[in-house]
Length: 301
Image 1 (cartoon, rainbow, N blue to C red):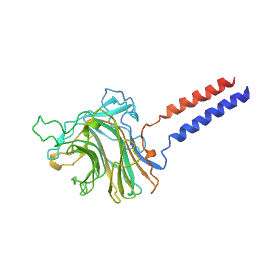
Image 2 (cartoon, rainbow, N blue to C red):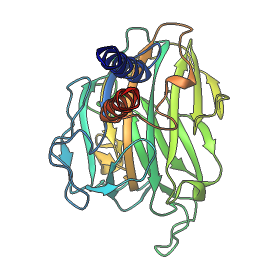
Image 3 (tube, helix red, strand yellow):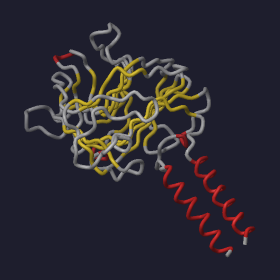
Image 4 (cartoon, one colour):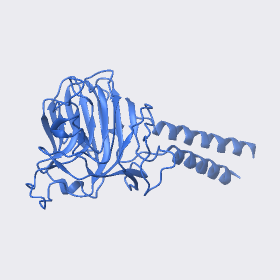
């Protein structure tokens, strides 16, 4: 009987160890992780988002502007997400974003050639199809996240092309990079409406690779070089700091379930390190371990 008990305990320990190992993220080091609900105390779908929302790794919590609210995401990576209810702006008339999270968070990587970020997001409507206000159908812009250079090179005024911005532009989804280069992610915006998508933007040894929905082959790549994003994390909008009369503009009408910023040693990044297709919860592994260990003990009796 005691021997069977020992076997049960060993089985339990083995499953726990396996669970903990499965939670590791390979060779990447996470700098900041915003779960936009799941790490916020008391978060419930249908209520206003926390102020601030919690950075579960770096401790750099983000203050809230407006009234973004929690929704049940249904995304593979999360139980909750943050919903932003912004009116779309345009390139020349960006409009002040009502709902967003932003602050001058330090996102400086150890190696400016090897770092990246990833996000789960969706739009509630197609930004480029509303012509009721007389705008051209490809005019509207909506930013999902903006990483880096929160205040621009002058320290007070945003300079276009600083930082990395995931946004819509002329009916496409792009990543805006320093130098005002627009790296196309997709030409089909309807694919991102009411459907959760995972996007990773990774600087690998000076090449900016864009990974969509876990595909190991980049959706697009550009020669990038070393880039230190400096300070700045904005979720749900785009930092302009006074450009065209707006400070935080081009807000999205949609939701973000997760944002994670990370770095890695040269040559060590793999797409398997990303939060795709799911993020296992620690409690899931513990429950699995208890169940497996208990079953083993019961069967040995």
